[in-house]
Image 1: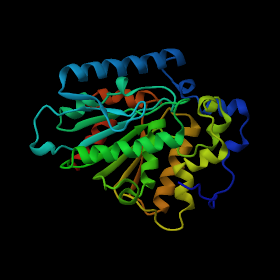
Image 2: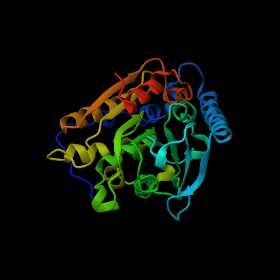
Image 3: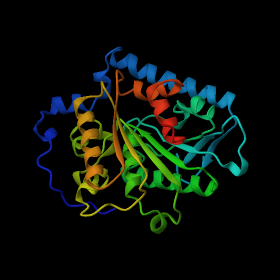
Length: 309
């Protein structure tokens, strides 16, 4: 995608921050309230690994399904307990976080248990991490994985795309895809769930997160959904389905600002968007609580999928 020219907004608040403050704002583990950074990251990983192990042993699944020939271009599918005619399930497609340089589909099936129990198939997507993978490559892989899922399950009852943190960035970039022209298929996208994401990559360039990514400012803008949508002079093309921009109460102020501004940009562009502020969770708890059937976010996802009031 061509990088759009700067839109109408004024100077971003992050540009006034010191390097030390910017680093803190974009270090999610430094904003946890119940555990220290190291314990939080360890718990985040352990919960994901255990949830994935449990899903693989208790659910029918297809693992390491290639959606391309490149490194990391595989996905896992976890099927509902009840069979569906012609694979006609809702599909919940998840893009994991890890700042584009860590994490794995093999430890990210947090939601597989609660969702498959309600008749939703769960797809967890892998992609090539930095430094081997570039942001351009990861965005392309996200689009190819969704096109693959649509072709593999053409009778699906809707694709519900979700991403956490870096995965939310990749999911947000899918709002910009001209599917028939660029991918040769129109996926049955029904909703986006963007959890604690980064939608303007500009500040990331100036943090240690960028060391393996090696983004230039031009790379960052080209891969920033915020900039593309702000620069659109009319309602941007793409799916007209609802977009839930989700953030945790204890996410850092910068993550919360990015979520709020992205939501506002979606609204100005005519999108069906909502801003969901999840109480009493931090950047990591927001996703690991998807292992719980009764968590606020799990219930929000199920109500969206099944159109419950």
